[in-house]
Length: 436
Image (cartoon, rainbow, N blue to C red; front, top):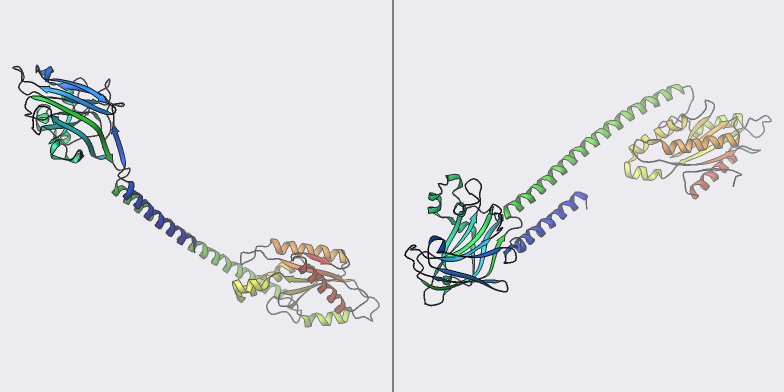
């Protein structure tokens, strides 16, 4: 499987897992309001010269308000309630609840001396310096809801979008239209109060828990993020493919130029040795037939004054793999290049012969075994370090032998044995006769 296919498959699995986790747990972001974090205060109408009374008590994490609504000659709308302050000392500081979508209320409100179903009010008061004053509680926005607790189950979940800004508050504070909508970005207090028109009597408000429910990340944002990831991957893949195509085109052009220079070099070599007959048509090296006459004339056994002669037998390592992987056309180009690399290191008097396939022989007249060995090692290193047109490393194994009181064929046989010793010893090495 290609890397891009693995990446796409992995991203597909990642997308499924993320969507599944969001579906299972995405709405599990919960913020709890507790007496240990907030300040709970009892409220009533006494500041407005009313006669109602109220007091707060606690049972564990539950907060209980006991109140009695009373008629007063100076105030005709008796009420009582609880005010839950986020920061008692700094009313400008509140909790940002804009990332939450629901308030969950486990609250009981009952009449202690009657069978009525009393109404109650819940407010999320928001402080905004655009219209709120720190020392005037009435300027904190009323995001509220009136309801009767007995009409619902013990635990009531109210979408925050259901809360409304009270009209009388907007009018009294002359709030402009741009600030008339509900706001929950700086809620400095939560208030519970008896409903409008609640008859006089004794009541009890029990707050078991207040929780705000929200998304760790909303669905639209999640889908947009995943979409951007997929689009980003597509753009990266496209850019990579474009770069790859450009690189292939660049390499093809480089190879074409290389072959052009190679062919020019071969033509120059062929022209230079045009006077020599029987050249190998592919590489420009001498062939076996042409070297035979030279050996018979210069190194026949009966000749008394024979000059020194050494031979280097070369074979390209794993050349069959080059043909199998890159094709025979590339293989032929590499053989031409190999001939040029070797001939660039030879003297004018040396004979370079293509012996067959990827085997070559260098005949070195007037050269000792030591000098031929040095030349062979130099050839081996140059072959290994050369940057070949197929972009891979190419090596050769070499065997070196010296002509003694024998025929040239015997010398070649010993050089061939040295060559195969080099191959058996790991290739890419030089083996010399009579040396351990």
